[in-house]
Length: 206
Length: 190
Image (cartoon, rainbow over all chains, first blue to last red; front, side):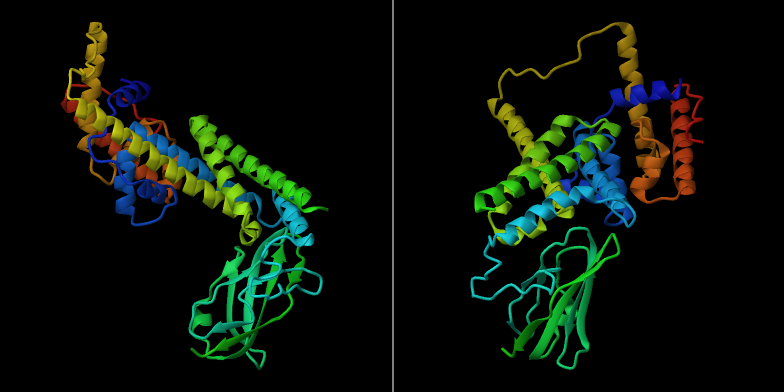
C-alpha cells in the first residue's frame, strides 16, 4: 500500500467520536496558545473530524493572513493598504466630525504642534488609583507608539510601548494624586518620529 | 468637504481595508483548500461590524489592520458557534421526530468498496493505538499537511517534527502489519 492509498483510506475512515472541542480551543490551536498537551488533544480531534477541520481551516487562514500582513508591514515593507483608512479618518477629523473632537464633557482633544498624534483620552482629570486607559488616534504609517506619563518634575512616572492606539500601563494605576502630563510618540516605517502635544492630567484622590 | 462626503470617503476606505484583508485570507485559504464561501461569510460579517463601528467616532481611529483582523477572528468564531447551534438543533429535531427517519446505511456496493471500507476502518483503529504525543502529527500528515505545516502549527523544530512523525508512522505500520494490512512506504516523512 502506498502513502497515497493510506491517505485515501484515512480520509474514508475519518470519524470523530469524541465531543467537539470548543471553537476557542481551535482558535488557541491556530494561535499556538496554551499548553501543548491541550493543543495536541485539540489537533488530534480536528484532524479526525471533517467539521472541525473546516473550522480549523477558516481560523487558520485568518491567522495566517494576519501573520503574513504583519511580516509584510515590517520596516522596509510597504504598508500601502493602511493609507486609505488613515486618510479617510484624517478627513473625518478635519471636518470636525465625531464626539471625540469635542468630548461630551467639553474637553477639547489635544493635538500636537503639527497634529502629529491626536490624543483622545483620558481628559484633564481622573481619579488616582483607577486603571487609566490612554487612547489616541492612529497615525498613518505608524509601526508603533510610545506613551509616557510625566510627573511634575518631568520624570517618567509610567510608560508603555504598543502597536495599538490604546495603552493601560499598570504603573499608571499606582500613581499618587497629583499633576502629571502625558504624551505619545509614533514611530513610522519611514523613520519619521511624530509626537503629540503634552496633555495635562490631574489625578485626584478619591 | 461636507460631512456626507467625508463619511463616504471613510466607507470607501473601510471597504478597501476589508477587501484587502479578505483577499489575503482567500489567498491563504486557497493554499489550505478552504471553502471560499466561509471566507465570504466572515468578511461580510466584518463589513457589517465595521459599518456599525463607524457610527461611534471613538472607533474610527481603530479601523486599522489589526482591528480588521480581530474583527474577522471574532466573526469567524461567531460563525462557527452559529453553525454548531444549527447542527445541534437539526439533530435535536430529527431526534424529536422519532419517526421512521432511517439512518443512511451504506449501499451495498461492489466487493472492492466493501473491502476498502473495512481497510479504512482498520486504518482508523490502528491510528487510535498510536501514542497521543505522535498521533496528531500522523493525522496531519495523512490529511495532506506537509511536515513544515505541522512544525509551524505546533511550534516544533524540524527535527522534533520529523522524529514524532517518523515514529508515529512506524507505530502505524507495525499495527497495520499486525492486522494483516501491508504498507511499506513512508519515505516522505523520513
